[in-house]
Length: 324
View (cartoon, rainbow, N blue to C red):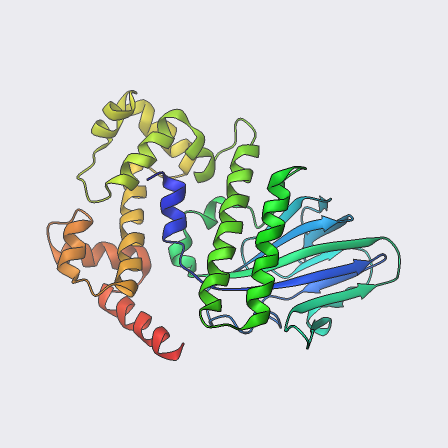
């Protein structure tokens, strides 16, 4: 399994909500974290905002300032860290709070936003995803807080628009299993957006996603993800990918931001954390599966990486399920 697929597998999106938005110029709205659209999602965790523009043009920026992103038809804008953000035809206007604009269409249950001054129309689909931030690393750490992903024209835009529409229908219908289906649709949108983003990265980019594209680092990542419990060394990884030990260590650290063995430890604990909340597996079994000879060594590594013991992590996961 490649590293991106493996990271998406343990991303553990625990909810998703969709809505349809239509604005006419001039307009400017402020989206504030969880309110009100994401209130049905599980409490805690990191909210990812995913907007697919289907008509018109607009701008987006984090509310705290920084880069302004220009968007056109077929563009995705993704906010990866639950940040308040502005979107509008003109960001210098006094913004309306999105919380006051969301309406639920009674005939279908679909959530919509309609607002503006009657000028040029802009339409986009919105998806709001939630994940446990501790299990989303290194993926979230590799993403800017706001990013534009250009899809361009062609079948990719239509396919993602259809996914967004299916998510809208699941959100509206409230059918049995709808929450799970919506989360899976959101995962597909997120995964395709990430793939497009990786392909668009310029040469010289650093970070985990850029590492996936590197001939040597990408292969080393794939090996560690394929066999996380193997007693990997930098020497063995270097031999397997066809580069010297020192060159791999330097290249890996430059791109990923940490040495190979430190990355492997973090990934092992991420897998263990996900299994503790999803499987009736013993800690001894987990220790063995992640390359540890003793429970004590595994417990120390787990607490160092995630801030609590495996037993405490499992209990917290059980409490979350009982509240759901």
